[in-house]
Length: 353
Image (cartoon, rainbow, N blue to C red):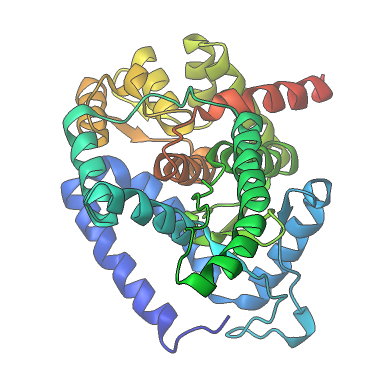
């Protein structure tokens, strides 16, 4: 991994411009922007990134049958160049695009057409409800059935074609597109990142689809650790408390936690605090946004009770949750973060007691 010349200087200039834009047109977002900007600035020293990657890699040994994080060669790494283990696989976005292109072509469309239709549908109807389809296990059984049919039918057909080929004839081989196991991918990503955030308090704040690989052995490769956030023990327990309060729909408790960690607003409206926290750390589906798109929802909440200060300790967990939800949306598998992280957070809080 090699850093482009002047990357840091150009980034600082871009962030200064972006902050000015937010200050004028979306002042309620400046608080979160500042925390994210501070985290971004850690990306420009690859020695630090390599050390962060190695620590999380060791923390994730329990999940080595599900994921692989490349091992950095710290002795060969400099501020601008990082040397690490090579992971052979396909980027998740590329795998989804490949499947999407095949699906689109059968409908006389392109993958870009499908993306455009999804965006327009979200603008018109808001974010979709969480996934309620087949489980990861059911999808995997279906995938194996398709593979079995292909492996069992094609060898005799190939043998038969050798004979028929003498007479200028041929039987088409059995072809079946094997779908990605979207449910399994989301289960693994949510389990792994939930452990990082809630158990280790040491997590990747930028787990977008370009940083996830589908490896040849079926595991997921997780790369790019330039935006690692390390929570203090107090902050880690706080995030656990927030997740549990969301799981329990405890508006009073969420308000107490928000105030304790620096949240300020005009009225300290309990419903606004609950709605915004659920939107930030759980789901943006219709049960929260009510069919409105994200910007419409946030504008409405801000009009009801404008906030002037927020809890900085949950900004990066929120970013991680948003990134993972974005992957779920891309996979047509919208999720509830709390469904995955609630039991983990509750278990961690019981340890403290």
